[in-house]
Length: 81
Image 1 (cartoon, rainbow, N blue to C red):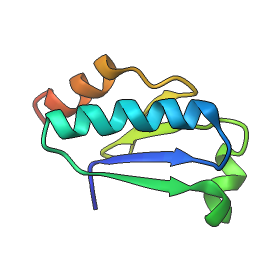
Image 2 (cartoon, helix red, strand yellow; image 1 turned 90 degrees about the horizontal axis):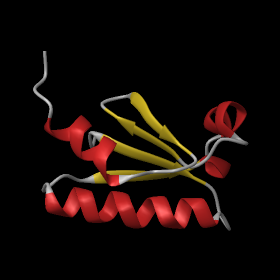
Image 3 (tube, one colour; image 1 turned 135 degrees about the vertical axis):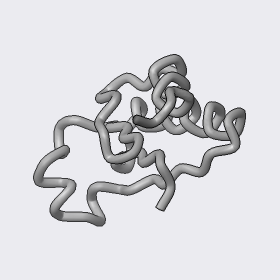
Image 4 (tube, rainbow, N blue to C red; image 1 turned 180 degrees about the horizontal axis):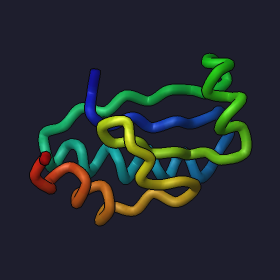
């Protein structure tokens, strides 16, 4: 499973912006990411229906609504404990 997961839903302009940021950063850092449409996952929809996009790295939520490159870069480059 990729370290980076992006939770989105259809017709979401914030999701489109987040996807572009995540795609660019992951490409630069040679990381893969997985995009999950919450409308196809009822358990995710129940939790995140009004809070997308959501960005997860290693299972930890690092952004909601607005995804910026810097926190993603930091999360992917910091040493693991």
